[in-house]
Image (cartoon, rainbow, N blue to C red):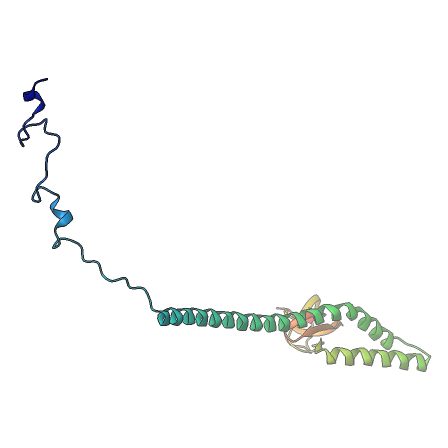
Length: 193
C-alpha cells in the first residue's frame, strides 16, 4: 500500500469515508433542538391528604354496601320465617285432621254410656281449641255457593229448595290456614247448571 492509498481523503463524496465527522447541523435535529423537546409536566402524584380522602371514600362505600347487604339479608330472613311458619303449621295440622274426623264420628255415634260420650266431646273440644289457637279454620259451608277453591264435589243432586250450585251437604269438613287450604271439604252440590 502506498501513502496515497493510506490517505483516503475524507470528503462527503467519498463512499469509503467511514469516519465522517458530523457537524452540529448534520446531527439529528430532533434530539438536541430544545424547542421541539416535549415539555414534561411535573408528576401529579396525589398528596397524602388526597390519598387519605380517597381511602376514606373507598372504606365508606364498602361500609355502606355491607350495611345494605346486611339489611337485605335481615329482611329476607324475616320474610322466609314468615313464609315457613304457616307451611310448617299446615303440615303438622294435616297429620291431626284424621284424628279430628274420628273424634267427630265418635261424638255423633249412638252411645248408651254418657260418661264415655262426654269424654269424647271433651277431647274433640280440646282439639278444636288447639286448631283455633294455631289459626286453623274449618271449611263447612253447607247452604252456601259452591267454591271449587275450597271444596271438592263428589256428587250432585237436584233440590228445588236450594239455589243453583249450592252446597247441599258436607261429607267431610275441610280446613284452612289463612288463605292456604290444608284439606278441601268434600261436598254434595245441588242444582249444577
